[in-house]
Image 1 (cartoon, one colour):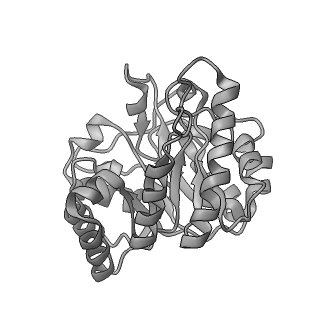
Image 2 (cartoon, rainbow, N blue to C red):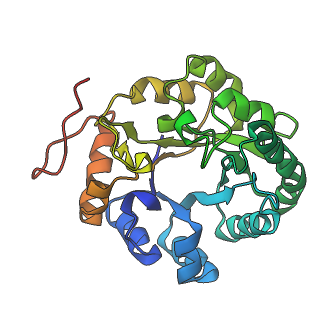
Length: 277
């Protein structure tokens, strides 16, 4: 799979900076985030990415459906933005539990898809629902397994509603292999990072660079590839130490790791060896 750099991995990079980093390091695609895109300008971003010869592997993020208003207007705007950027998919983060009613929160995700799927289809945009590790169920993701995400996507054509396979969120699941095979053409995005221990106080920032932790990324990538997925492998890392590094250092590191099957390569003291359990 070809490599994509998710903008969150170089969080402090502006849109022009992340585009330049991709071009300089031979990375053919970028995963963009809506806030930096809005800051730079949607039309300017679309023109810049196109002129650089890059693809937009994903736009993050829509979703957060579990509040009373389900943020439907904002999600329609996100769909329009994805279309304008030529994004391969819009990543949907389901949302957490606002009122302790987990059943109702999951129902709101399903009912929001009923409204948004036809809108996305008319715009030619693929929706990619992201199941999230159970530790995020309360505040970010009431859809906790790939199997649950597939059930929510099932009423819609695969080219309209699919799923994100994010290594951090799904690697632990005993049903993962079977569900990846079942997902097939519904895999709209494949994202990698690594599970590193000990987790920081803010567990959201507990993502390591691929190869630095406990996830069998070679095995997971093989599973995804066996479905016929031919999209990008997008590296998305939330980590303060990574964010503090020069953008090109991070990008060059990822290119090397991608080429060597996600094995870290020690370079100038920046790269870390895999964590020993």
